[in-house]
Structure formats: structure tokens, C-alpha cells
Length: 513
Length: 71
Image 1: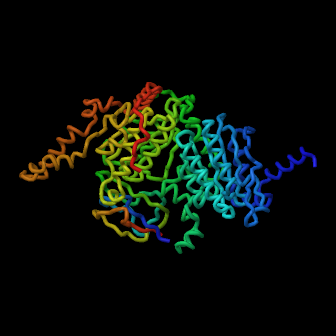
Image 2 (image 1 turned 180 degrees about the vertical axis):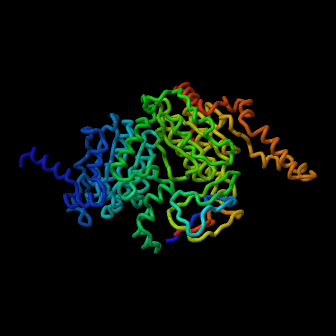
Image 3 (image 1 turned 135 degrees about the vertical axis):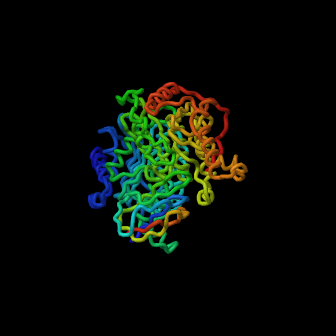
């Protein structure tokens, strides 16, 4: 046969993936094929495939006769909005996208290359799980994948898109990436699927109830962004990439958003209720401060008592961390602390400045959270903020009490600048508690204890529950009108643009995990 | 299938804003509690009809306390 013709035919066969029947089945289940996903994800005509001829070497259990086009994973690079990204897109139509030795090798090598080139890595997960015919070879290949991605962690952004199932040991792959996206109807991630759970434990549960979107986006906090379908998932991933640098040696791209840096926001004056116990939606504040009101929220449905996500201020990418008084009063519990800490560390790894909005009554107390280890979880926030060397700007909107004042980033837990609104109350404890301790004897001995307590509470409140005591010590750099928030934050970020921090060498801090 | 509406955290129940037979939508505030000196709304996790109210104002509640159930 003509050698040129042979090449053409071989490629055509590989590009046809698992064949027309399997492709049709893939479409019927509401999914795009691995190649359609890649095609849509990259700027037109920029995708270059690597290793399409790679083939497994297993002969056992009939594998000698099995051809698996591209080994069930399409690997390559291309441009997303003009910047290179490496991709591994699993092909469910080819032997169910099962993960075998060479499937794993392609995956791991793609990550190694992305790390060396300093470009983000995106996986599109859609796999029936481990290729059991390959036994030990498959098992060890998981280690290649995990080793490659962990050694690339903090060097390049890594994003997993759960567009199909990802079950078994393989599920450690997405969960160890920086961000996990999950398609609402087709994405699943679990340490074991329902069949295995049933045989091992006798528990009967559907795939969705075990490890669908409701589980990971709401309960476990392992899915950062929920997508409606393949297109939505790829669009959202591209949008996230726009906030990120290519690697840890770069700054994120600064773009002209057309929103004036020092824009005043008159409607912020009076927006937040002065009464410290009343709830309101902190999104209302965030949207008004950031460029054009665009906020890319991460973990939107998990630990909703805090808000984290990306936005731009004067065109600069920033990470927003904010209390949410609308949910659980904005208190910080174990889940909220985990959510904040990992987000702060991601931003610090990738040179993204942090802007923090405080309105929290504190870390959650009581047996339930104490026994869950609120101290250990809350500590993650302190570690994350103090360790972080990126620019950090804090806005104290209203309440900032006790440990949560420290954990949400105050002057000496890492903030370069702290601004407070006039309605801010910054103190070690609420006035009721303080007065009941300091004046316990006096109140008990008083003719009218209730009146004595009320007087002392008021005294303490008048003296401490305001932003002025903190500003007198320099812990608050300035007290500003809410309408001036964007102006002050934008100026601070501008000054901090080239902030450099030198610290003595250590391997890493021993953060409470 | 009945859906339980739990208190989101430890604290004191202040009020239940719905009655048996009321229709509620997902994310509607159905009760109010107090914790950490904050007024905290309890949102319905699902849409449905209130079947039973199991907690009363003034009661100390926690994450395991069912405030009401929906059908």
C-alpha cells in the first residue's frame, strides 16, 4: 500500500474514535465527544495533538485484539483566548475511556510538559474507570498521574472538567486539581461507584445521590463550579482561565475593562444596615465595587456563609473573600474556613491580589463545631493569610469580632491596607459579653442588675464597638465612606503592584490540615 | 418524599414564618433563629407543602434539629 495513503487511513481511523455507533451513544447521553470538546475549547485551528498513535501493550484477557484509538484520551495543546493551554480529553467512545497504562502515561506526560512550558493544564474527564485487564500496570499509572499533577501544583493552574464519570482511584485526579467543574447531568466523581458500594457494603444508592452535583457542589465542597452541559462547562473554564496567569512566575493579565478605577459608588452609603444583627446580601457590595459588576464565584453553593471568587478591579485580577451575613449571620464554621483557606493559597500561588470584606460575628462556637475541630479548621485561614505574600487589602464593612477579625485578614495577619466603614465594629468581643465579665460583681451587687448591666454594656459599646480605637493604633489605615471603597482599594492595589516580601528559607509552614 | 428543614447551626429559634399546609418555594425563608447575636434566616432547601412543624420559638436548636418537614 502507498505509505502516504496508509498514514491517511490510520489517522482517519483514530479520529473516528470508537466508531459511529459509540459516538452516537455518546451524543444520546447528552455529551459531546472528546474531540468535539477539544475543538470547541480552543481558538479555531490552534489545537495540535500529541501521541495519537500511542497504543497499549497488554495481551492478557483479549487485549491483544483490542484497538483503543488514541488509548482513550486525546492529548494536545492549543490556544484559549490567545494563550496556550494543555489538554487531556478522555474519550468514552473508545473502550469507555478506561484508564490503562498508556492512557495514564499520556496524561502524566501532558502535565509534565505543561509544567515545563509554564502553561495551564485542563483535563476533560469522561472515563469508565480503571482498565482492569491491565492490572498492576494500570494501578502504577495512577501514581504517574498523581505524581505529575502534584509536582505541577503551584507551578501551573490545573482545572478538571467532570463531563462524564470519574470513579475509583482515578477520582483523586480531579479532586487534586486547583478547580473542579462538574456537568449537572453527566459529571460524577467518587471513590467507588454504586455497584461496588452495593457489593462491599450492601448500601443501595444511585450514582447521582452518591456523587452527583448536589453532593459535591453543596455537601462536600469538592466541586467548585457547576455547569449545565458540555458547552457551558467549556465556556466557564475559559472564563476562569482569563483571570489566571499562565504559571506562578507571571502576573495575571491586566485588561482594560472600561470601568473607571476611582469610580465613586454613592449607593453604597447606607446600603448595609447599621444594626449589626441584621442580615443582608454581601454580593450587593461586591458587585458594586468590582469592574462592571462582574464576579466569578467559586464554590457558590458550599459554605455559603462566606463568599470567594474572582473579579477585576481597575482591570487587575483579584481574589475576593467576603463574609456573607445573609447566611448563618456570616459566622465562620469549619467548612467556611476550609473554603477560604484553599482559595487564599491558590491566589497566593498565582500572584493574584486578595481583597477581603469583613462582616462576621466570629468563628462558630458550641459543641457541634468544637467537636468538628473548628480550631484546626479556623487555623487554616490564619496560616493562609499570614503565609501569603501577594497584595492584600481588607475592607471592614460592619462587624469584625474576635478570632474572625484575625482569620479574615487584619493588619497583622497580613493585610497591607485595612479600610473600615464608619459603621464598622471591631472588637475582641461583643459588648454584652465583655460587660458581663468585666462588671460581673458590680452588676450582681447592683440594686437593679438589669439596669446596671445595660449601662455597662452601652459604655463598652460606645467605647470599643467602632472603627476609631483600631484606627488610633494604626490597625485600620483609614475610615472611609462606603462610596469611596473602590477608589481606596484600587489605589492600594496600584501601589502594591510590585510588592516584594523576603522571608527566610523554610521548606513550608506546618499548616493545620 | 418528606424533606426536613433543619436549623443551619446551633442557636435559638425565634419564629417559624409558615404554617402547616403552606406552599413554600426553594430558598424561601421559612423561619428565623438567633445565634452569635445575629438574626439568621432559615431557608427552605426545596419546594413543597409544609407537612409538620416540629420546633417552637424559644427552643434551643442545632444542626440536627428538624424545624419542619415538607411534602
